[in-house]
Image (cartoon, rainbow, N blue to C red):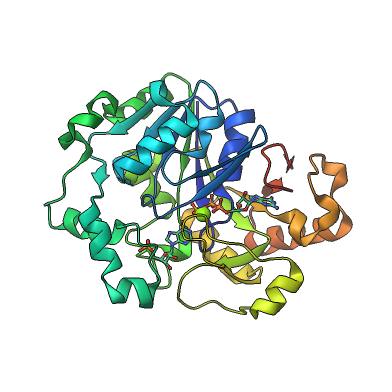
Length: 333
Ligand code: GTP
Ligand code: IMP
Ligand code: MG
């Protein structure tokens, strides 16, 4: 059995979706489990020439027979979930924990009407923060309280534990990232819960002794969407000149950008107990790498960058992503 956790090492949008979809296709995944906050996230997965923009379904859905789980710690928006179930065709293999929290229109209105959240923090308007407020107040309705969800309801902690005992491979997919964590991020410019590796385990209902690999996903440059401190931030014109511009999957907002930050990578390694690093968008930093999937295609400049990350963080860079497509990946064993 193997239990892998995929966690963002910066401000989100590192490409966790891409890394998880690769694991799903090539590492024989039996189950993909969504952790993290909720539909404030947006993962892009490019699979068989099709672009999927997903907010709730874990990117591991690309493994044909894998079971798909939404864990207890996650918040769902039932409309978004149902649309994504149709889009990905996972109706017969998706399961939702009975304790998963449910976002209503009222939560979304409350968030959109909250100037502090919308203007100061730069919230996504998906209603996650106010839904957590109700959960803390113990007034929130959970998945088990909605008859239309009953066909999907299970105890995800138990199911995943049983799969692991049975020798199966499971990937937990976090959302958001280390520096957006309510506890360890750049408070108050953060999301509404802890989203680091231990938080993801707690979302699912598993203990730390079960974990085999914590994969910290870092992008070859930094991006941040929404407000908050951002060291060495580049002017928009410079971002464009470098070809680093990106737009948010959920909000369509232009992402802020800055060069790779080794100090933050070290902190993220510590907070998450990273056992390997995945580095994405290497093709944007080094265009010769576009679509590369063999070790010998790594250029001297790319090798130097990878070695510097390893020297600084003391963690092995195992996954090198060279394009949005699942197959654009170099593995360094
Ligand atoms: P959150 O859970 O919202 O934090 O998202 P995420 O970490 O899954 O990342 P997201 O999909 O929002 O953003 C990453 C973007 O980069 C997507 O558009 C991906 O398709 C793209 N991407 C991922 N890896 C690579 C890569 O190696 N090269 C290129 N060019 N694009 C990539
Ligand atoms: P909220 O979680 O919607 O309240 O947003 C709080 C902050 O986290 C804002 O700055 C958002 O832009 C940011 N944020 C939340 N989810 C994501 C994500 O998935 N990727 C990147 N930023 C996010
Ligand atoms: Mg995203």
